Length: 77
Image 1: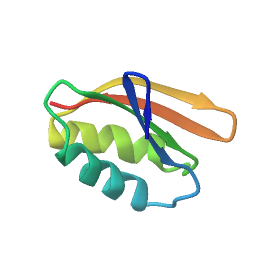
Image 2: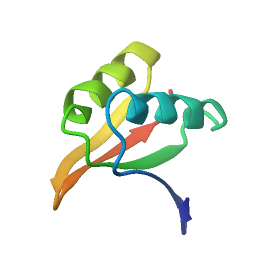
Image 3: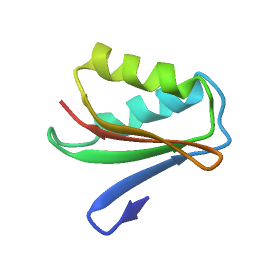
Image 4: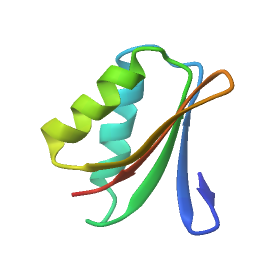
């Protein structure tokens, strides 16, 4: 799940609500200020991930469509 300095969480193929649930579980173990890259194919993630960040106090650094899905970079609050 790590690529150099960047932690990557591959959630491709999972449907709502699993991307958010797995992101929340993974984020618990991270130190504040840590950034993580989330890869997903769930079309609802473009709504769910930003909402999760607002609700749990994390910063959504970037949010971009990619071929076949979406990529988010989140910094733990």
